[in-house]
Length: 256
Length: 38
Image (tube, rainbow over all chains, first blue to last red; front, side, top):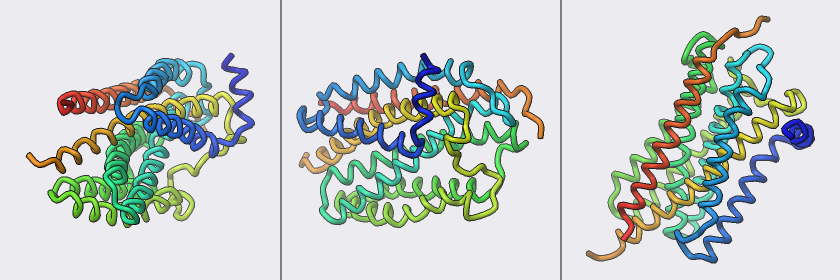
């Protein structure tokens, strides 16, 4: 069955796959949220179930079914998690950028809550992806860390958004905190394309982005499976974290 | 160019780290929401 899926998926562009799945899930959640008006929504529970199931299946797919990479050998299997984690962390930071602009154009608790939640989940994905990158680098590059352009810009990105989250903690007044955070969110986003294109702009030890036409179809299929799995989890976490942030704002606004 | 031989301990470590971090973040978020819900 996996062979059939692999042959089917090899015809699609990897670059289109992840945003498409993300869009479908976000639309489903948004619609349900509008209908249910709050945390009673059941779609996130279904998505969580799908994510857990996909995690369980992903392990045998990546560890056994997918072939070993020609040069990296079995350590290449780490990339089935490292690549989706890092690219989805960047996607979440783009969501923060959008929510920050939305807040400055039309201030609302929801835009501010989405901005905060997206960075919170992005940090988890980003730090985890960076950790996996270090674990992968040791047997392949011979070192856990090197000040290569991609690694350096990624580290700067993580430090900047740690500062963003710290700023949110230090400012007590809700409107001022939201405005300052939105401005920082927009300025910080400059580093997202710099990090993404760093492997092309500067001479880097880090690989450039792959193309499905040059990768084994089985590997492409497992990578897409992993993307879908992490996207399903991302939507659940982003949704719950946004509700959490929204409730915190409502509590702040309510007089004691 | 040769192929990296072995390295399974790094692969297992990656899976362990991923599952633990995702689980801790999820449980932490769930606990926060439960504690704050009226």
